[in-house]
Image (tube, rainbow, N blue to C red; front, side):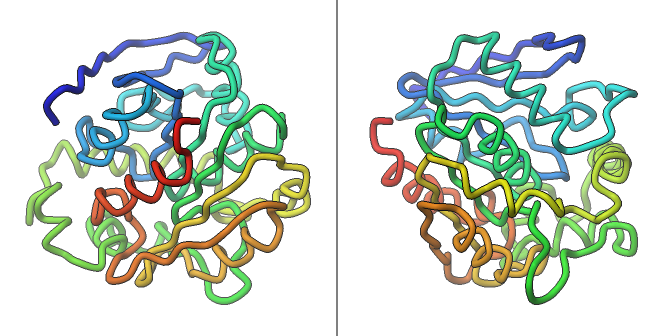
Length: 261
């Protein structure tokens, strides 16, 4: 998008190296990507960066950040990101968590409940769905798993191609292996997180695609129940990957919610 200047850097936090994409100006917004990694460029990131200082770190062991051999839990990533915020001197940022990134964002929110301005969870993992189950990567092919995140398969094709490249398949494999290291038992949720979210002071927006086949919508309703100040927005004709399938819609929901911070 015209007018947005992005920078890429590597930052070391507590001995862990993170690839960081940053662009825009304004209130800081930390965007945390899915367990399938992230593409370098997405219209959703550009749309947010027209209004905010947007930071998109690649999770340790995902996409362009190397794997720390010691890491064994999602909460480990949340602690590393807490260190990142401190190292960058960011005060009261907003968190936008997408899928697996939503779980990380929720964990971060429980660690220092009063120091976030806003919390946005889009199709967030991290809570056991009261009805249904989170789609299991172990029994789903690479391409089929990512395709399951889209209501409109043409949106997948535009981003990844009808036949994703060998490099992309390899990246999904690396991401999947990291997920199994840190989120296998129980699979993609925490038994303690629902009990800790009651202390979160930041207002929360929970967004779910109407046709989410990866994380059942009952998980979204559960997040709204346990967070003290939260509301649910359902995006019609949309799957799990709201930011890729309907980027303008999600960017508008986020900006209307955060305002100027």
